Amino acid sequence: LARGIQHTTVRQAHRKYEPNFHDKYGNLVLLGGAAVFTAVWGYVFTQAGIEWGLSPVGRVTPKEWRE
Image (cartoon, rainbow, N blue to C red; front, top):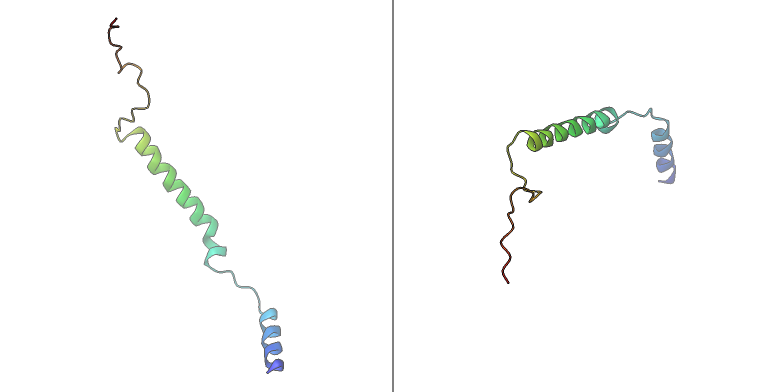
């Protein structure tokens, strides 16, 4: 049994490394996702017409002071 395990270990160690999906396409998928993320949020911030309401300047009028 021990000899079989050693033989299997040696055989796996000598096997040539084959890149998997993440090795081949990982960076491409990451960059593609970042591009889509940026494009979608760029559209949302600039074109979607959402009133963000971040600043009250020009919308808030002061009331008259009462004594």
